[in-house]
Image 1 (cartoon, rainbow, N blue to C red):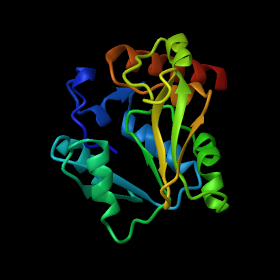
Image 2 (cartoon, rainbow, N blue to C red):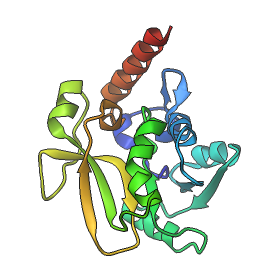
Image 3 (cartoon, rainbow, N blue to C red):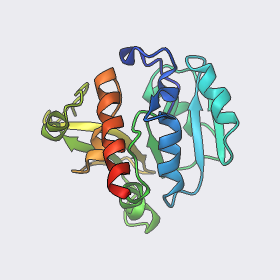
Image 4 (spheres, one colour):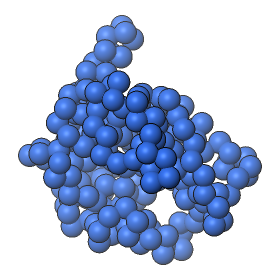
Length: 195
């Protein structure tokens, strides 16, 4: 999902193209998906982010789908109207630059094993986001101590569930400049540890 305006970030670039440690956020998300066992990658783009559309059209293995850019639900409904796209569908916001393949695999495993058909909201504790120093721009309506991660699964039944993760990489959504700084610092620290 990469067709939003991203005004809170106050970046000179479109939000998905905002660099985190020198790499566009959307490219970091794509790298996490590439490490995972997802079958196909579709990018929901819109007129709100034309440079992002152009960028993604050049990426092998990514199919872009034009949406109205009217928000997550409206854009998701546009995706679901495509005959080639059937639930279960993993949706990932372009602002989760620390996404890792292992985390994605843990999320999609029950769907690959056909253990569930329910839709899934992946959440993290608000306390984790606060401990990391990142913004809390939304909480779950039914449980205000949980924040959505921007990672969800649309199932093929009317059931829905919420799964809580404690992975800091899922807790960092880059919505503001400070979030971007924190994400870059964590990537830089991880890169230093790998040496």
